[in-house]
Image (cartoon, rainbow, N blue to C red):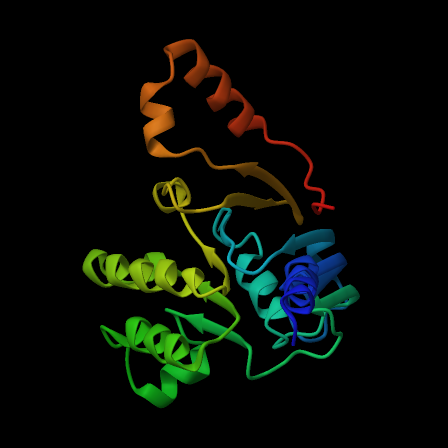
Amino acid sequence: MSACAQLRAGARCLRVTALAIASLARSFRAGTPACSARVSVLRGLDFAMWPGEIVALEGASGCGRTTLLRCAAGLLRPDAGTIVWFGGRVVPRDAVAYVSATPAPRSLERMGGPVVSGALYAALEMELARRTRLLLVDDLAAVGAFERRLALELVRRHSLSGAAILFTAGEELATLPWVSRTVTLSHGVLTQRRNRSAARIASSSRASRARTSARSTYGRSFRSPQ
């Protein structure tokens, strides 16, 4: 392949999103099995991310972050909307992985106890060895500080190989300087803000920091980058 052809192929790869979600909706049955009422968790949600990006997903407990990640991994079928992985409608199982620090209740029963220390790090290390191209990491807050620090270093290293990373996080993790974007899930929709490096925040004036804080607090409606 000529140098020009290689450049064209590389440009096409850069234009293809690792994950593109459009008008995603998901609800769950509420109350007892006989109850027909449903609770909407995701409402017409749009989201996109590219290879090499690290995106932190914030939100209150029970807001639907795990539901979003499981839909993005192809493990949970949405009620409406479309999900595209690397330009295709079929999830590539060898390229997409969902890793959670908190297994489902049935998994806990099989394990006979709580989450084993180091399990999340081991799972991430395995995905790093598999060269997974889209990695979805859930519930980092459930592990200890030392394991969380090691896991985050693996996540950062994995993104350098071109993988797209989406992980659930609290404010302290979402503001890490190497996180590309932070998106917040609230009432079934996403808002986003682009992160600034810690050095730029430290060197900015007090008034500038106040304006940045206000913009981050109120956010803006998420629109997938063109």
